[in-house]
Length: 222
Image (cartoon, rainbow, N blue to C red; front, side, top):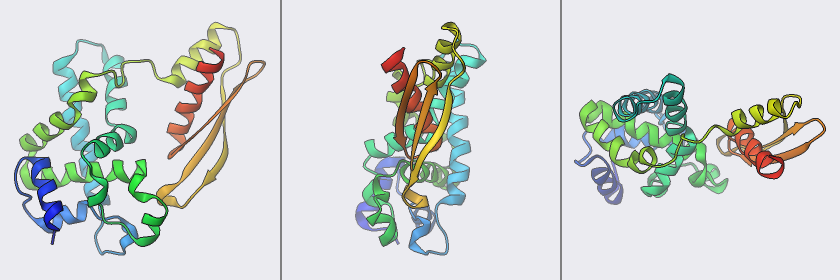
């Protein structure tokens, strides 16, 4: 069953006590624990629920075209944003990780934090229904939806346009290094434009490393 601190955390999160405690425990459990059930199925569901909630919210909130709305949606439901929300609410101490995952820094992994955040959304949907879950997501994501997340042009798109505008070849991305275990992997990616230069970045996913490398390139050469 849930520890008292975790029960209180989940009650504050959803605005009501957690129904079906074993399901919520599953949402907090990483595969490294060796438990029979971990968060992956609930993460799958929560990812879809989060996308629906944010898409509906943006549709009502903004007048942008499909491309603009998709840009914001993708940024707001990204693993990076989910991990930021998880840190904002103090999720890490309540996650259940195996010893090796903890020793490898799993409590501060964007991958794990983002996945568990989505799993909690899935658990809320199963036990409390859509309306309660929508209210929870809107409360947790309010600062990000009301802020600049996803409003700026994506760094990779900005870099590609910069290259075209300066009559340069398209950017080339390459994996420099992959380190760490699967649950806390780190990727170092370099992006280069022939005749201009190169920039590197390291992140917890290839996609994020490429994004950060593009941003670093634009800051240095753009």
